[in-house]
Image: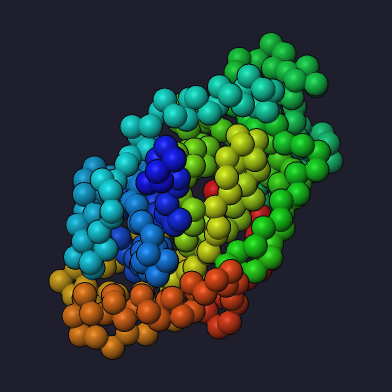
Length: 323
Ligand SMILES: [Zn+2]
């Protein structure tokens, strides 16, 4: 706290933000360990946020299980974890600001409305590709018309090109308007969109550094666009390599990721450390973590370090988002 009123922000605040859809597996432990190591290497604070806005996907008790698994690996948050399901008022306030300033608008389109509009515009969408919303309900195009409101979308500028530097992947750029179009902030099913909740929470919690899996790298430009429209600071980003399943896809429950073995936390940490290129020889959890902090600091916490030197799976070209 500063003497000048206590408003000074900590120099470093990191977070791990799991969705409670099941126990931690090898892939999610990599993200947790990386964010914890980065916070410790910077002598910062480390928070855990339970990302349970998508209630249909959440599994009862998974949040407590994840926290217990983290604790068995020596990864304990510096504050009581927050839950997105309890932060409705924050998201509502941000959405109201965007609506009031004309940066967001109501959309009445169903998926088939969007598909028809894309075909009519000569832009039929490819399988597995993101649907780029064609702007049908934009205020300047007449708004909702006689359709009932279903969702709320962000109104992007015509040039919504976002450039940023990932601490591992290096300089990246995406034109958000071309890649995804005016994206959803409040969903037709009544739930908050992931992008809005993350941006509001990172700012509210004073997060300075986001360290997370590379599958989320393509969400970053949407989050930066939203931060700018809300007048919020942009954190630094470091996207870690993914652990792939036997099918070559990101390890997940769907392709058979097993829960980490909390009976042998050292083995789980060693496996996660190997993905991150962090070596530690110590034979107990506390010692392993202490050595790993030094290894991480040497590699990733040098002043203004942007490194792309041999971590597995570097991929500077952003795929079109799937989330
Ligand atoms: Zn619409």
